[in-house]
Length: 153
Image (tube, rainbow, N blue to C red; front, side, top):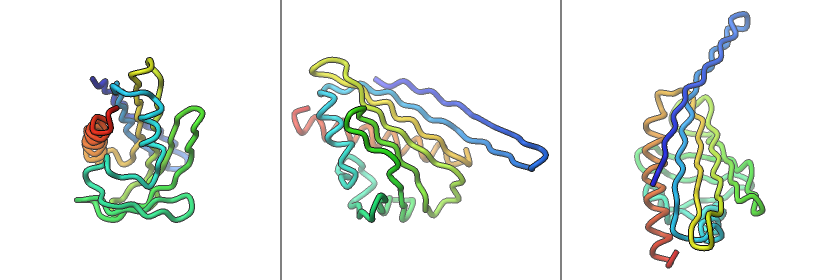
């Protein structure tokens, strides 16, 4: 069960000749596992078995570096990993694609003892990359469902 919400935000400041257009992608998905089980997978920033397009992740301080199939090497900076609020926030800071802005937030919420939800929001600029990023989110959500169902979650 997924709910999609796509927004385009543009800010134009003519005097400074700043034009910023970004797309906001949002997926909200219900999982048949506890919020703790879902967070255990997501909060392990070196874990990639739920992302079908990544074979391994290397950690370097607060960054994770990986090769993504079809995209090349990507470096993401972990901005927040909060066990209390079950929130992970990260930003792609080095990619082969000309990304101007990327900010992703993954928030796990309790529904009951046996189910939880994930809200995954990604801001992306330029918006021409939004479809590719969104497909990656959807593939990863399916991978997450598979990993959790194989773990009994």
